[in-house]
Image 1 (tube, rainbow, N blue to C red):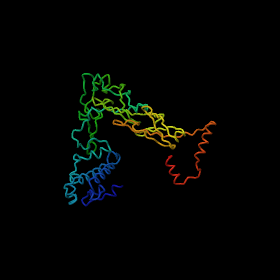
Image 2 (cartoon, rainbow, N blue to C red):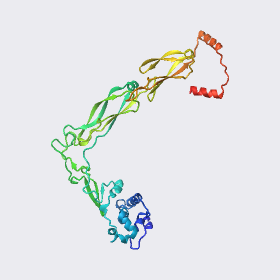
Image 3 (tube, one colour):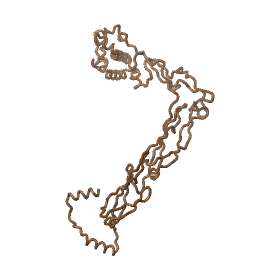
Image 4 (cartoon, rainbow, N blue to C red):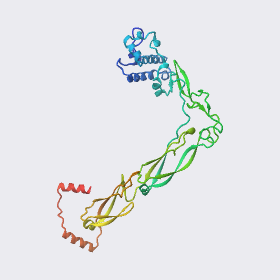
Length: 386
């Protein structure tokens, strides 16, 4: 087996502690703890119930760690070996499971032990009072509501303190009593081999007290589920996915604990005309060939009414114009974003006789040389039209 092949015996019948843990003599504190944790888990009696040698191997590993984890004992051992520690076996190393302060860290992570080897004294009790859970509700808004802000109402199902017992969970005039299983300590001890383990008391869940006369209305919970309506004030400028926190509007904690928070997640519907990017708005407005060629004053919609936009003569298809301060209000700030208007020239698809005659006259006056464009000019046009 791995244990017998790797560990060697010293002249006095005891294994070298460094070899027991499989580490070098220059091992660091963290490396030492990691090596011990690995071997302790491998040989722990709980993991080897059918292996009678596991407890002895576990003791040997723990003894080695007890010495090497202690700076003074390690220095003596490095200089004089086992003889320098005096006595025999575990006593020679001064091995006493009750003095290990980091055993609870090592085993608690893997076995869920609150206190190993009795190092924690009388044990630790958990408070019955606990903070209430946070809640989440979703609220869907119209685009205009998100732009201007609104006041809405959100329906919430949450636990609230029981009026009869005032959140204590005990019947009126009664109160919690000391847990008989743990004597009020919140922990019970179990003897396993040569060491003891403290675990959370299953009767009182670590609180040290139990309710023998529960409140009839809440059945000892101290809370009752109710449906409430919360007024939600939505500020101007919120966007899709914004979370609004309402402090203390969540569930009431157990046994008089503070309430959690309520988070309202906003979902904003799309606008049929505007597209939002941050605090800016974008829209597309069609113009005629004549308006693009000769220029014009056109009316474009904004979220706050129409705005007159001047189109200069010779405007090319895809040109974009900026209108300042017509975008979305800055959330919890000052000012607004911009409104960007892209114009697209509409070419008529059906012309009457007179329209054709006029376009033919225009074409005769403004001939275009239909020759292939130079690559450099073609690139510029591609950039212009996106």
